[in-house]
Image 1 (cartoon, one colour):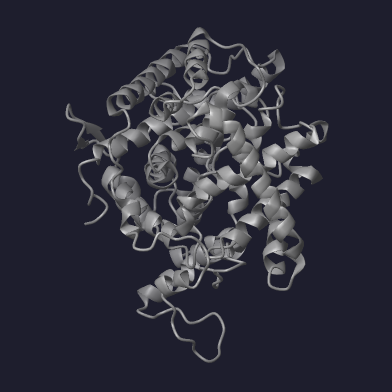
Image 2 (cartoon, rainbow, N blue to C red; image 1 turned 90 degrees about the vertical axis):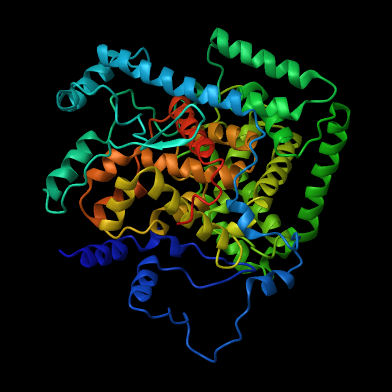
Length: 544
């Protein structure tokens, strides 16, 4: 079947998954974006036709659109600033040293594990070990002799010299011909997609990932926790020092207060915090009294209907989020945010951004694992506090990336284009391979930007990722771009094995990260920081 035929067949079967299915339902409304149709029209030299026939309307520029909304905008901001290099004022030496140590230690650990039986684990029972050994026996024979596990090494096509600049590597893997046994490659990928290590379920074992529960801490973890507690115990928290400590992850016990400080929700002065919390929580529930009853009004019902549909789809495998009281909390948070931000309104995908805050702030009141926790056992005041705190911190996050969700979502389009340019420089093989099979970055990276990789990673990994995002300047906007680039290159082996459009799209939309934990996220962040540091003096590196 031809490449075009494969693409048409793929999009027909996966229509609900493509980026175009994400539409604005309040404020900024527009037809769904069809990447395949858009690409074909551009190639043919045509312009996409309007979604509905009728009398043509006068075009409205983005500036005109934002000027007629009541939302708060900083007039005169240069949109290109989102793509400018972040100021290198965040403990460059400390973070670079940490990044290099993480990668070095990780490589040594993998080499040691190669010498042992990779299926043996203290977390498995004997039956599970025997079953895993049978599952992986054939793959172990195929992979024997590899010095570095492809599931954990990035194959970053470049290195850093003594001055921290990027030096291109000449050892890029060759790209095979499209005629090379496509069926066999698909079968091999399915056999090798699972890494040779204990599989951690999507929602279980979160305690092992420093996200919930109370596992025994190592001496190093206990020392880090003491540093956080000492820093937070002072009358005025040094936010710069808090960012340095938080970059490498925040202990579960202090994560709620650390997130509130890093997001700007709470002041650094300890004496003011209780008054600020009380005032902001009262303000939020004032919004509920003022606006929530209007959810069934004609001009708001589309917004509420879409939110009501999306909430049950939020982390459907985690019982916590299927509880009626939790879903009601999410509905109120999202509806109030949409009402207060008419420039964007509610957009599918924003519902995901509430979940990390909600889970982290539940930890203020419980010590057990959160996945199956019954929130009805909490006092009403605790639930109200969790709801209000989640709303304000989500709002702070979205303030920095709101152009991802305004009319035509220009922020996402710019970031996807920047990702394409960045990948073309750090791994030409991957970039040319996707070009060869006509895979557009927008077709898979739209979701990475729209949902901040939350659909690609387990929730435990998202929470760890956000520790660093909140410690990094412009973490959710600028640094996220480098994380996406490192994440894509992380799968270069699997990408280069796929020999058709459909196989590549299935892989990129279903990357095998279910087993990921703190270790993998730390390596990903270290690689992302190395990319950012390598290009720190090259603000035009996106552009040819």
